[in-house]
Amino acid sequence: MVSTLFHTRFLRAITLIFTLFTSITLGSQLFTANTVPEGLSAGCSNALMADIACGSGITLFTRGEYYPLTDLKALCVDSCASALETYHGDVVSSCTADNWPEEMEVDMPLVMISELLRYNYNLTCLTDSGRFCNNVAAAFAASRDPEAANVQGALPAGGDFGDYVPPDTCDSCLVKNLRFQAGSPYFDGPRLQAQSVYESRTADCGIAGAPLVTTTISLFTQTTAAPTPTPTCTGKTYSIQPEDDCNSISMSQSIGTEWLLWDNELLAFCHQFPTEGDLCLVNTCDVYTVLESDTCDKIAKAHGMTVFLVLL
Image 1: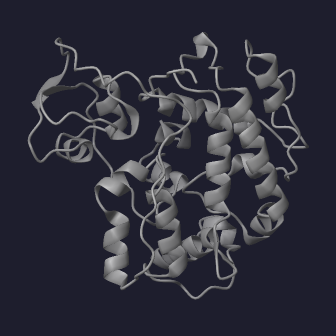
Image 2: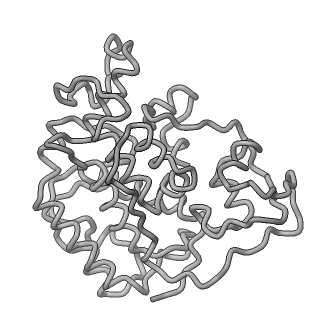
Image 3: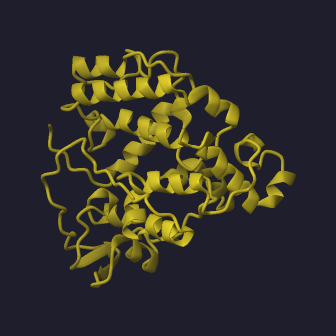
């Protein structure tokens, strides 16, 4: 396996992958000969262009978004889940030594394409006692914003989220949703783990016998330690305190976590975050903490931004 420095270019790759996904309409292939990235090995290209027995629309699944019950019933089926597992396994075995073209400046394994497609699908299609947890979360969000019912198009999933009694934060589906995200090495997973959010929720709700199971990033071998911060800083210098972690520094110093990592050439997901030394804070901003009821669209509208900028 190729040793790859997996740092905060992950964020750029996320945006690139989602751009690819939103431009694709699945018939039977995720990629064709005209859309597969250039410069790949023949085996990797063939694996990416393989047929996937899933309905069109799964490439649009994104964490933090809500989807109509009718769509979930059509797309979240056993045959598709199995097809995605097979597709991902073939891509991993065939694309181990392949990376993005240099001009895309994405320093990470190309196999993240199938990994993130599978992550978004499994999260969106999560169920509990016959309920789609995405729909339960939509009902919860709607209950927290009663005025949305009076605004056209404001209801999560267009109001098509099933006939659920508004759940509370201890609803088994919401807890299961949190467990999935907290156990993952992607997106908010490391932050949720560091802050013991899932453990606090289950303790508050009196839930026992459902410990958090975490997974690690296994798509590459990390051999290079996080580089030390550059000695020259064009912004503000911050000395790391004994009780600090990357998330507490982000909040106290008004800098996005990804920018903090990027500006200091540190690894993504706060992996091997330094416990001493100085950090350079360049891209400071007003930090917004995402609420459980938030969506990308909701945050973008509230702050006068596009969804694309929110994802960045």
